[in-house]
Length: 193
Ligand SMILES: Cc1cc2nc3c(=O)[nH]c(=O)nc-3n(C[C@H](O)[C@H](O)[C@H](O)COP(=O)(O)O)c2cc1C
Image (cartoon, rainbow, N blue to C red; front, top):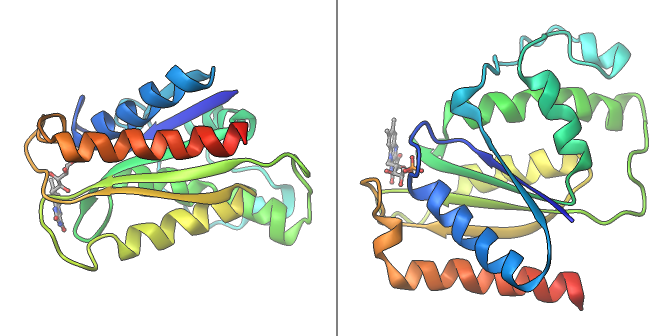
């Protein structure tokens, strides 16, 4: 099983990365899996330019590091989007990556290309934020659901962590670590059940 974790924080070992790692570590202690982390902050993934090129070919016209990320997304059996909350949404790094998935959206909805049909794949959102607002993650969850739909991946749920700001804050919160591990056990139960 290939597990892809897309990191949208510019902070190395930040809260969203630590939360995703806690899920991945617990998960792979139960079910075998090959985990790959993609650190978007280290890559050049420009925003979608809305040129409509992918509507005709299903391929993105822009050639940058995203070119090598498409096959990773296609091949993954389990995908995690892990990102911080920036102004009630996802960070720009992960939003650019998501917007470039428009090329897969075009394949699915305009060109009617069937991809990995009958092979159930699941995706999750891991998102962190400093404050505690009720609607803090509403926008990000909608974006993640839309992203997973475009790549024919079932949205499995989310790990949404409030009240973590400074780097290392997540790793100091036992309840939140337990939440991450509980999500991993749920995912493992679904995979094996
Ligand atoms: C540009 C910027 C915008 C932010 N906007 C919000 C926000 O709207 N709400 C919130 O609760 N936290 C906000 N935060 C705090 C981060 O979401 C929080 O520190 C998060 O845990 C960082 O995750 P990371 O360590 O994975 O980068 C913001 C931080 C930055 C740098």
